[in-house]
Amino acid sequence: MRDPLAFRVMNEIGIIDQLGTTLFERAMPHGLTLPQFIVLNHFVRLGGDRSPLELAGAIQVTKATMSSTLHRLEAKGFVAMAPDPKDGRGKRVAITEPGRRARDDAVEAIAHDLSALETAIGAAELKAALPFLTRLRSFLDQRRRDE
Image (cartoon, rainbow, N blue to C red; front, side):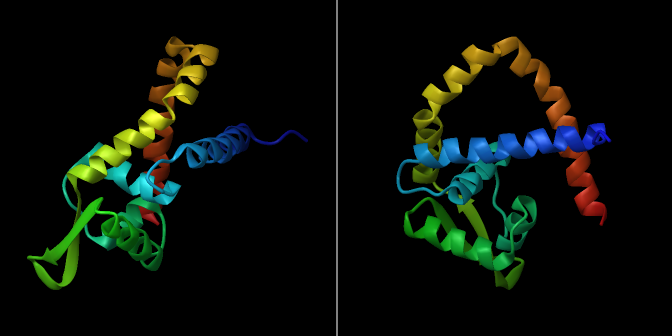
């Protein structure tokens, strides 16, 4: 019996995720871990500030895991935490300028590998894959929120 098409697609994405994770982890500068890079990249992509709970939900980790990641980023000066003006018990987190530079340095550190990927696959094919991947991400994200 052949596996269902959607399973085969998700399986390929899972393998790609594992290989991509290894690639990124080997290249990270500033002692960044991949989870720390993901947080910095989230801020650069979407802007603004977030609560630790919002970040944990967006990145799909526990609040405790996110708190640990944020404390490490704060110690490096890559994020700033401030009291939430709407909730005195809560905090708001924002990326700092050094955090933006660290994120950009991480992207630069992997630029050679990304260039090799673009050369091997082709810019047109990578660009053509983006609408599908964006729709798939949006679908999965919406399913997660609906549950």
